[in-house]
Length: 156
Image 1: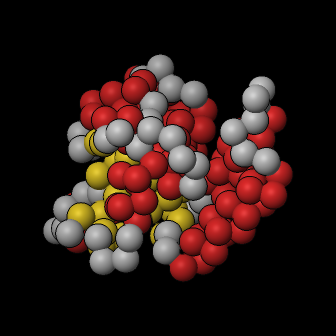
Image 2: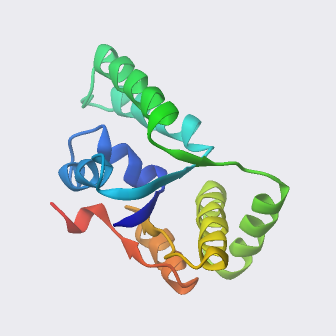
């Protein structure tokens, strides 16, 4: 089994039927992954993404579906995900990543959280998590930082 770090662009695919949805759901089935990591900021980012989908023209979700998916995500937060806290060290690392890679602020925080988990895994002598991300720029930065990555869009 492997461990996975799902950035928000990958994590939302677990809840919204779009390209990569089935593949991400398969990763999240019990017994498939040793660990499913997310950044603590995903608590806000996932809800914001679901709200944006409702506001799209035409909307891909209605408000009732959005609220159901938010409730499911919050349940998964309590039961299935290991949320990586965002602290001063993560913020500093994220800022330093922006000096090297063309990242948006919260993408840099996501990557910094993943690298923190990778460093802990290496110190413990276990495999690093696979970075799951649907953003090509962020995925390229993760790869440049030595992470194995998967784009859900490659799994229609």
